[in-house]
Length: 260
Image (cartoon, rainbow, N blue to C red; front, side, top):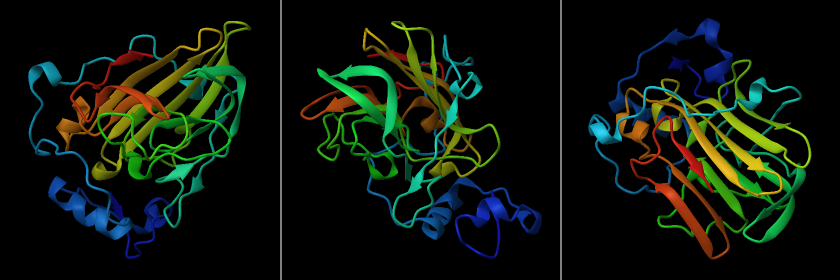
């Protein structure tokens, strides 16, 4: 991780020439968190960070079959995030309400707008929201979600500043068979600052109103339990209805494809 004398969040990315490179041990990640952000809500119990997942829970060697990277599609848009409170927008950020390229029905309601968070959430409607630190209560539904929402890979994620990375969205295909693709590209887990890599996409399909979530990469050498899915929720919710394919469980490793 890059460390400077200043502890201002943005300095982690802006002061490379004046910084020294330090290789943090997992035990020090808690100190980093205390420096940079207010304490988080408690999560469900996780396996010890140094415990390797069992063979059946181990991440796959290849990416998700059929994965599409929206950041490489023609006409893609790089999402712009607004900071939540005093926390930098690349850490706890949400977009404005964005126009959908086609009407999309979610839990029986047709929507014309959507919004995104840095924490792997895609919501519907003009009222933006999401949950702090990508948290969710298991099992769904979770009362903190006041708006219809897809938890594509809901976790405490941070967007890198590197060119070509971030959260991108684009529309492919022709009417009436288009799809909106949103890609969270090479983010990292807050608890594994700059040493982890997470890439996944959500696809919304015109006409059928189907949703595909494709988890292309989850690499966290210092937190192998996270690689199995223990840090994330993959699910959807609207009001009192909700379901999840993985809710802080070892069911969302690299290579996972979920159809809703």
